[in-house]
Image 1 (cartoon, rainbow, N blue to C red):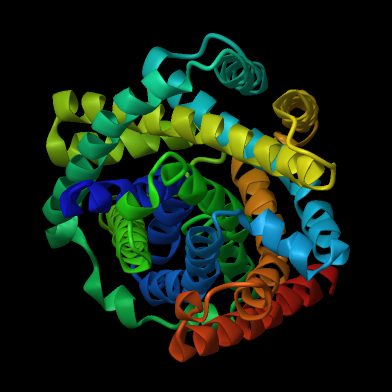
Image 2 (cartoon, rainbow, N blue to C red):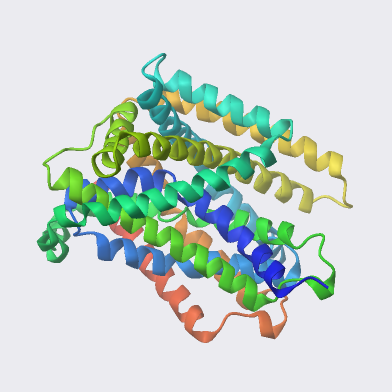
Length: 417
C-alpha cells in the first residue's frame, strides 16, 4: 500500500503544474505592470481575483477525482450544448494565448542573448520547438528540469520581494483613485484575465488530476481531501507569487518613476533589472534563466492543454476508445492552433503591452461562461454526494460568476462607448 506521504506528493502534482503555468504572463508581465503603474493600489484587486476564480478551478479537481473523467466529460453529460459552448469559447482564444506566451518567452530570450531576429519570428520558432517536443514526447525531461528552476524562481522572487520592501510607497496601498479611471478599469479586466490562470485552464487541471491517479489502485488513490489540500496550497502559492511581482514592480519601477516598456524585449529587460537591483547580477542571471525555463514550459503546457481539450472533446463524441484516433485529432489540433498563433504574432504584435491586454481581456470575457459550466457540472452531473462541494464554495462560485459577468459587461460598455 502506498504511504500517506506518497499520496500527498501525487495529490500536489496537478497543483504544481497549475502553479508552473500560472507564473507566466499573469505574473511576470501583468502583476509587475500593476505594481509599476499603480504601486500597491491593486493588491486588493489581485487577492479578490484569486478568491473569485478559486471555485472554478477547484471544481475541476472535485469532478475529476470523483469520476475519473475530465470536465469535458462533465460538459458532455450536461448536454452537447455545454461542450459546444466551451469549444466555441476557447477556439478563438487558444491561438492568441499561445501567441502571447511565446512572445513573452521570445522577449526574455532577446533580453538575455541580445537581439538576433524580430520578436514575431523568434516567437514562431519557440512555438515550433514546443510543437516538436510535444509531438516527439520529450516534455517529461524538460518538466523535471523546470521543477528545479521553478523552485529557484520562487525562492529568488520571494527574496527579491523582501529586499525591495523598504523602497515601497506604502501609501499607495490605500489609493482608490483608479476606481474613477475608465482606463484603469480596462487594465483590471486585462489583469484578471490570466490571474492566476485563464478560467478555461480548469479543464487541463481536471485532465492532470485524472492522469495523476490513472495507474493507482483503488486502495492507493489519494483521498478527495488530499487532492483538495494539495491543489489549495499550490493555488495559494501562485497567488503569493502574483503579489510578490506586484510588490517588486511597485518598489523598483513605480517608486523610481519607471514606465513599463511597450516592447517584449524591453519589458523582459526590466524584469531582469528587478532581480539585478535587489539580488545582484549573478543571482539575477540565474533567476532570468529560471524565468525563461518557466515561460518555455508554459508555452508547451498551454499548447498541449488546448490541443488535448479539442482532441478529447472530439474523441468523447466518437464510439469506442481508439488511441490512434485521439492522436490524429491531437496532431491536427496542435498544427491548427500553432499555425493561427504564428499568424496572430505577425498581424497583431505591433505593441507588446496592447497585445497582452487584448489577449488577457479576451480571456476574461469567456471566464463567466466557463465558471458557470463548471458550477453546473459539480451540482447537476453524476457524482457521489460526498464529493460535491460544500455550500460555502457553491455560494462563492455563484458570487464569482455574477461579479465576473458584471465586470465583463462593464468592460464591453467602456470599450464600445
